[in-house]
Length: 115
Image 1: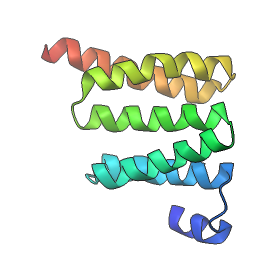
Image 2: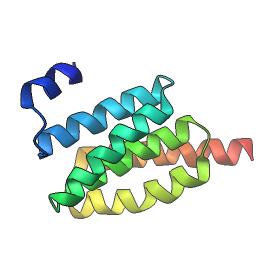
Image 3: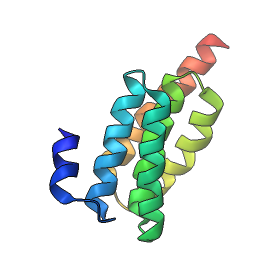
C-alpha cells in the first residue's frame, strides 16, 4: 500500500512522502528486512530534518526504536524511545506518544526479564 502512495506523490521531499517511507521502513524491519527498512527510515528522517519538521523526526525515531527492539538491540531501543516519548508529548501527538510509551515499556520489561 505504501508503494502506491509513494508512486502517487512522486519524488518531491515532503511530509507525506517521509511518513510513507518511515511506515514502509518500519514494516520491512519487523518483517525481517532490517537493513532495507532502516534505509527507508533514515531517508524519511533526512526529509524531516530538511523540512525542519520535529514531528517527522520523532515519528522516524519511534519507527527506528521498534526496529531496534525487534532485532534485540534493547539498549538502543531504550535510548531512542525515552527521548522520543518526551518529544511526542511536547508536540501533543498523544496517540503516537501512547504507542511509543507502550513500545518502550515492552522493551524495558523484556530487558528486565531476559537480564
